[in-house]
Length: 276
Image 1: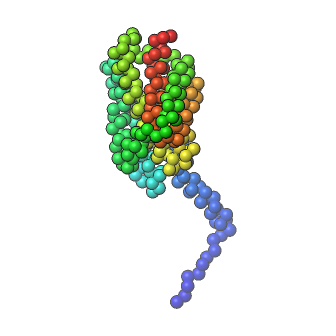
Image 2: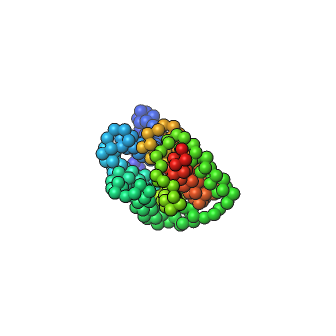
Image 3: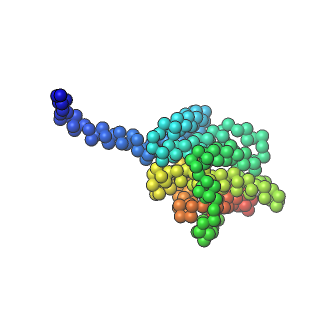
Protein backbone atom coordinates (compact mmCIF):
# COMPACT_ATOMS: atom_id res chain seq x y z
CA UNK A 1 0.00 0.00 0.00
CA UNK A 2 1.48 3.27 -1.08
CA UNK A 3 1.32 6.19 1.33
CA UNK A 4 -0.09 9.45 0.10
CA UNK A 5 2.73 11.86 -0.71
CA UNK A 6 2.93 15.00 1.46
CA UNK A 7 2.94 18.11 -0.66
CA UNK A 8 4.71 21.01 0.99
CA UNK A 9 2.82 24.29 0.81
CA UNK A 10 4.25 27.09 -1.23
CA UNK A 11 6.43 29.56 0.70
CA UNK A 12 3.84 32.33 0.31
CA UNK A 13 1.19 30.03 1.83
CA UNK A 14 3.39 29.36 4.85
CA UNK A 15 3.92 33.05 5.44
CA UNK A 16 0.18 33.68 5.18
CA UNK A 17 -0.83 31.04 7.74
CA UNK A 18 -0.02 33.05 10.90
CA UNK A 19 -1.79 36.09 9.48
CA UNK A 20 -4.92 34.06 8.70
CA UNK A 21 -4.79 32.45 12.13
CA UNK A 22 -4.52 35.84 13.83
CA UNK A 23 -7.44 37.18 11.78
CA UNK A 24 -9.60 34.15 12.59
CA UNK A 25 -8.74 34.44 16.28
CA UNK A 26 -9.61 38.14 16.23
CA UNK A 27 -13.01 37.51 14.63
CA UNK A 28 -13.92 34.92 17.26
CA UNK A 29 -12.47 36.68 20.32
CA UNK A 30 -14.94 37.82 22.95
CA UNK A 31 -13.35 41.28 23.20
CA UNK A 32 -13.62 41.91 19.46
CA UNK A 33 -17.26 40.83 19.32
CA UNK A 34 -18.13 42.80 22.46
CA UNK A 35 -16.49 45.91 20.97
CA UNK A 36 -18.53 45.54 17.76
CA UNK A 37 -21.82 45.40 19.64
CA UNK A 38 -20.77 48.28 21.89
CA UNK A 39 -19.99 50.37 18.80
CA UNK A 40 -23.37 49.55 17.25
CA UNK A 41 -25.18 50.47 20.49
CA UNK A 42 -23.28 53.75 20.58
CA UNK A 43 -24.20 54.54 16.97
CA UNK A 44 -27.86 53.72 17.64
CA UNK A 45 -27.93 56.02 20.68
CA UNK A 46 -26.27 58.84 18.72
CA UNK A 47 -28.87 58.45 15.97
CA UNK A 48 -31.73 58.51 18.47
CA UNK A 49 -30.39 61.57 20.31
CA UNK A 50 -28.90 63.76 17.59
CA UNK A 51 -29.95 62.66 14.11
CA UNK A 52 -32.91 60.41 13.24
CA UNK A 53 -34.69 58.68 16.16
CA UNK A 54 -36.48 56.30 13.79
CA UNK A 55 -33.16 55.15 12.29
CA UNK A 56 -31.74 54.71 15.77
CA UNK A 57 -34.76 52.61 16.74
CA UNK A 58 -34.36 50.45 13.62
CA UNK A 59 -30.69 49.91 14.44
CA UNK A 60 -31.62 48.89 17.99
CA UNK A 61 -34.08 46.37 16.52
CA UNK A 62 -31.33 45.01 14.25
CA UNK A 63 -28.92 44.75 17.22
CA UNK A 64 -31.56 42.91 19.24
CA UNK A 65 -32.17 40.38 16.47
CA UNK A 66 -28.42 39.96 15.86
CA UNK A 67 -27.81 39.29 19.56
CA UNK A 68 -30.59 36.69 19.68
CA UNK A 69 -29.19 34.83 16.67
CA UNK A 70 -25.54 35.26 17.62
CA UNK A 71 -26.06 34.08 21.20
CA UNK A 72 -27.79 30.94 19.91
CA UNK A 73 -25.01 30.20 17.38
CA UNK A 74 -21.95 31.03 19.53
CA UNK A 75 -20.00 27.89 20.35
CA UNK A 76 -18.15 29.29 23.37
CA UNK A 77 -20.54 29.37 26.33
CA UNK A 78 -19.01 32.45 28.06
CA UNK A 79 -19.47 34.47 24.87
CA UNK A 80 -22.97 33.08 24.26
CA UNK A 81 -23.98 34.00 27.81
CA UNK A 82 -22.62 37.54 27.44
CA UNK A 83 -24.46 38.08 24.14
CA UNK A 84 -27.67 36.83 25.70
CA UNK A 85 -27.43 39.32 28.57
CA UNK A 86 -26.72 42.20 26.16
CA UNK A 87 -30.20 41.77 24.68
CA UNK A 88 -31.48 43.98 27.50
CA UNK A 89 -29.44 47.00 26.27
CA UNK A 90 -31.32 47.67 23.00
CA UNK A 91 -34.53 46.59 24.73
CA UNK A 92 -34.16 49.46 27.22
CA UNK A 93 -34.19 52.06 24.46
CA UNK A 94 -36.87 50.39 22.34
CA UNK A 95 -39.24 50.32 25.31
CA UNK A 96 -38.60 53.95 26.20
CA UNK A 97 -39.23 54.99 22.58
CA UNK A 98 -42.31 52.86 21.91
CA UNK A 99 -44.31 52.97 25.14
CA UNK A 100 -47.00 55.71 25.37
CA UNK A 101 -45.57 57.13 28.58
CA UNK A 102 -47.13 60.58 28.03
CA UNK A 103 -50.52 59.26 29.17
CA UNK A 104 -49.11 58.46 32.62
CA UNK A 105 -47.98 60.67 35.47
CA UNK A 106 -44.26 61.43 35.15
CA UNK A 107 -43.59 59.75 38.50
CA UNK A 108 -44.58 56.34 37.11
CA UNK A 109 -42.51 56.38 33.91
CA UNK A 110 -39.48 54.61 35.35
CA UNK A 111 -41.60 51.86 36.91
CA UNK A 112 -43.66 51.30 33.73
CA UNK A 113 -40.55 50.89 31.56
CA UNK A 114 -38.89 48.67 34.15
CA UNK A 115 -41.67 46.05 34.29
CA UNK A 116 -40.92 44.36 30.91
CA UNK A 117 -37.21 44.73 31.65
CA UNK A 118 -37.61 42.86 34.93
CA UNK A 119 -39.48 40.11 33.09
CA UNK A 120 -36.66 39.89 30.51
CA UNK A 121 -34.02 39.87 33.26
CA UNK A 122 -35.73 37.02 35.13
CA UNK A 123 -36.06 35.01 31.92
CA UNK A 124 -32.36 35.50 31.10
CA UNK A 125 -31.44 34.54 34.67
CA UNK A 126 -33.33 31.27 34.25
CA UNK A 127 -31.65 30.54 30.92
CA UNK A 128 -28.21 31.14 32.46
CA UNK A 129 -29.00 29.31 35.68
CA UNK A 130 -28.40 32.39 37.85
CA UNK A 131 -29.97 32.29 41.30
CA UNK A 132 -31.25 35.36 43.15
CA UNK A 133 -28.27 35.20 45.47
CA UNK A 134 -25.83 34.93 42.58
CA UNK A 135 -27.09 38.10 40.90
CA UNK A 136 -26.63 40.03 44.14
CA UNK A 137 -29.61 39.61 46.44
CA UNK A 138 -27.49 39.06 49.53
CA UNK A 139 -25.88 41.05 52.34
CA UNK A 140 -22.22 40.14 51.84
CA UNK A 141 -19.61 42.47 53.39
CA UNK A 142 -22.02 44.98 55.00
CA UNK A 143 -19.33 47.59 55.68
CA UNK A 144 -18.47 47.82 51.99
CA UNK A 145 -22.16 48.05 51.16
CA UNK A 146 -22.55 50.96 53.58
CA UNK A 147 -19.63 52.62 51.81
CA UNK A 148 -21.39 52.14 48.46
CA UNK A 149 -24.55 53.72 49.86
CA UNK A 150 -22.65 56.81 51.01
CA UNK A 151 -21.31 57.29 47.49
CA UNK A 152 -24.92 57.80 46.39
CA UNK A 153 -25.09 61.14 48.25
CA UNK A 154 -21.91 62.38 46.57
CA UNK A 155 -23.05 61.18 43.15
CA UNK A 156 -26.47 62.82 43.49
CA UNK A 157 -24.99 66.24 44.29
CA UNK A 158 -22.44 66.03 41.47
CA UNK A 159 -24.90 64.93 38.80
CA UNK A 160 -27.43 67.57 39.82
CA UNK A 161 -24.73 70.21 39.40
CA UNK A 162 -24.14 68.86 35.88
CA UNK A 163 -27.70 68.34 34.61
CA UNK A 164 -29.98 70.60 36.69
CA UNK A 165 -33.14 68.64 35.69
CA UNK A 166 -36.70 69.76 36.38
CA UNK A 167 -38.22 68.23 39.54
CA UNK A 168 -40.10 64.97 39.20
CA UNK A 169 -42.78 66.33 41.54
CA UNK A 170 -43.85 69.96 41.54
CA UNK A 171 -44.78 70.35 45.22
CA UNK A 172 -43.27 68.44 48.11
CA UNK A 173 -45.73 66.37 50.13
CA UNK A 174 -44.83 63.23 52.10
CA UNK A 175 -47.14 61.13 49.93
CA UNK A 176 -45.84 62.42 46.60
CA UNK A 177 -42.25 62.11 47.76
CA UNK A 178 -42.75 58.53 48.98
CA UNK A 179 -44.38 57.45 45.71
CA UNK A 180 -41.76 59.12 43.49
CA UNK A 181 -38.87 57.80 45.61
CA UNK A 182 -40.27 54.26 45.48
CA UNK A 183 -40.66 54.47 41.70
CA UNK A 184 -37.05 55.59 41.37
CA UNK A 185 -35.80 52.90 43.75
CA UNK A 186 -37.50 50.13 41.76
CA UNK A 187 -37.37 51.57 38.25
CA UNK A 188 -33.78 52.83 38.23
CA UNK A 189 -31.83 51.61 41.26
CA UNK A 190 -33.01 48.00 41.44
CA UNK A 191 -33.69 47.43 37.75
CA UNK A 192 -30.43 48.95 36.46
CA UNK A 193 -28.18 47.35 39.07
CA UNK A 194 -29.78 43.95 38.58
CA UNK A 195 -29.38 44.20 34.80
CA UNK A 196 -25.98 45.86 34.48
CA UNK A 197 -24.04 44.66 37.50
CA UNK A 198 -25.91 41.52 38.59
CA UNK A 199 -26.42 39.99 35.14
CA UNK A 200 -24.31 41.64 32.39
CA UNK A 201 -21.17 42.23 34.46
CA UNK A 202 -21.30 38.73 35.87
CA UNK A 203 -21.63 37.17 32.41
CA UNK A 204 -18.91 39.46 31.04
CA UNK A 205 -16.52 38.36 33.78
CA UNK A 206 -16.30 34.85 32.36
CA UNK A 207 -15.81 36.13 28.81
CA UNK A 208 -13.64 39.22 29.39
CA UNK A 209 -12.04 38.78 32.82
CA UNK A 210 -12.63 40.74 36.03
CA UNK A 211 -11.27 44.12 34.91
CA UNK A 212 -12.67 43.72 31.43
CA UNK A 213 -16.14 42.96 32.75
CA UNK A 214 -16.22 46.13 34.84
CA UNK A 215 -14.93 48.23 31.93
CA UNK A 216 -17.28 46.76 29.33
CA UNK A 217 -20.40 46.87 31.54
CA UNK A 218 -19.62 50.46 32.52
CA UNK A 219 -19.26 51.47 28.87
CA UNK A 220 -22.62 49.91 27.96
CA UNK A 221 -24.19 51.64 30.97
CA UNK A 222 -22.63 54.96 29.90
CA UNK A 223 -23.69 54.67 26.25
CA UNK A 224 -27.34 54.39 27.31
CA UNK A 225 -27.01 57.84 28.93
CA UNK A 226 -26.09 59.62 25.68
CA UNK A 227 -29.66 60.91 25.55
CA UNK A 228 -28.89 63.43 28.30
CA UNK A 229 -26.85 65.32 25.70
CA UNK A 230 -23.96 66.12 28.05
CA UNK A 231 -20.37 65.00 27.62
CA UNK A 232 -19.63 65.94 31.22
CA UNK A 233 -22.50 63.77 32.41
CA UNK A 234 -21.18 60.83 30.35
CA UNK A 235 -17.83 61.16 32.13
CA UNK A 236 -19.66 61.25 35.46
CA UNK A 237 -21.83 58.23 34.58
CA UNK A 238 -18.75 56.27 33.52
CA UNK A 239 -17.04 57.06 36.83
CA UNK A 240 -20.11 56.22 38.93
CA UNK A 241 -20.77 53.04 36.95
CA UNK A 242 -17.16 51.88 37.35
CA UNK A 243 -17.31 52.47 41.12
CA UNK A 244 -20.59 50.56 41.43
CA UNK A 245 -19.03 47.80 39.29
CA UNK A 246 -16.04 47.56 41.62
CA UNK A 247 -18.33 47.39 44.65
CA UNK A 248 -20.29 44.57 43.00
CA UNK A 249 -17.10 42.70 42.18
CA UNK A 250 -15.91 43.00 45.77
CA UNK A 251 -19.20 42.19 47.50
CA UNK A 252 -21.14 40.14 44.92
CA UNK A 253 -24.17 42.05 46.12
CA UNK A 254 -26.44 44.61 44.48
CA UNK A 255 -28.11 45.69 47.73
CA UNK A 256 -25.73 48.52 48.61
CA UNK A 257 -25.27 49.78 45.05
CA UNK A 258 -29.03 49.63 44.42
CA UNK A 259 -29.64 51.94 47.39
CA UNK A 260 -26.71 54.10 46.29
CA UNK A 261 -28.10 54.39 42.76
CA UNK A 262 -31.57 55.20 44.11
CA UNK A 263 -30.21 57.90 46.45
CA UNK A 264 -28.34 59.44 43.53
CA UNK A 265 -31.52 59.69 41.45
CA UNK A 266 -33.76 60.78 44.34
CA UNK A 267 -31.40 63.66 45.01
CA UNK A 268 -31.09 64.36 41.27
CA UNK A 269 -34.77 64.31 40.33
CA UNK A 270 -36.66 65.15 43.53
CA UNK A 271 -34.85 66.73 46.46
CA UNK A 272 -32.25 69.01 44.91
CA UNK A 273 -34.49 70.38 42.09
CA UNK A 274 -37.11 71.32 44.68
CA UNK A 275 -34.51 72.95 46.96
CA UNK A 276 -32.79 74.93 44.21
